[in-house]
Image: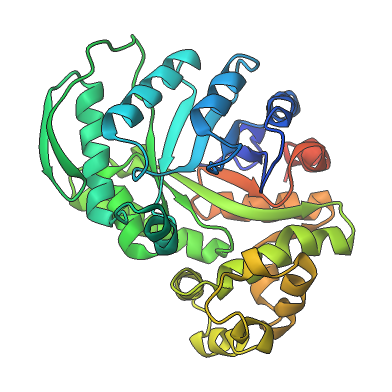
Length: 352
């Protein structure tokens, strides 16, 4: 895939089943729709209720023939390396080489609540190494940050290349880890094109220092979009998500630093009474969508427009080309899915 063609519709992917869902079967039709539109990938944001990654990816693999099917993301904490390795190679075989496995850290509170150790950069990098060695047919003995495993081996391996391993990241340390140990990076939503450019440079520099080919690594930029929607629909798709992410300690700070925004402005945003009254509870779980949108009035006016894409489909397509021009190999469309992406798909492939 060319790094330079910014009108190639296959460089766009989308989530299926965004958010919480009562019926996962809807995702099968959404994947079919995405493939029919000409998008290059569908992504599953796993949730531990009705969005089980291998079940969904396996089902989608049998009703599509072309789109890549990605995990964006899953975690190492609840799956032993043998289970992850088996899942990865089975899905890669079922999809005939179209699966890609994205791993990430998630939030500290989740792992405390689940009673498992929080993943670290070191444990994630070691997990990637363990998976690669298993897929290469090795017997793995390991004792380190990822756990203690006396003897791991996959007795059967399919005749298909292992799936690419991607790491979800926002800050430079995690992006550099992806450059050293993974096949690419999935960047967090609400980064500006300039932040994506800097992230790409960090990824490639780390790869070079590790003696790897920087050109072989993939950079997936996640961009919240609202093409050809009403103002209210755009606020639900974009503002409500931005408000939630930026309110989270650590994550919001990393987004602000990556974009070169003022940390004083972030402090002012978080000093709003609605957030203070949560007393540490997560905003996106405890506030309504309307309340989250209202919080955005406490942000600088340029934050959301500079880090997302809303407006008519032609304008959104041009914004996405900016992200591709900044070094993204692929864009994961966020905030809008299914038929809502049809206008954008129609205009994106036309000449810039």
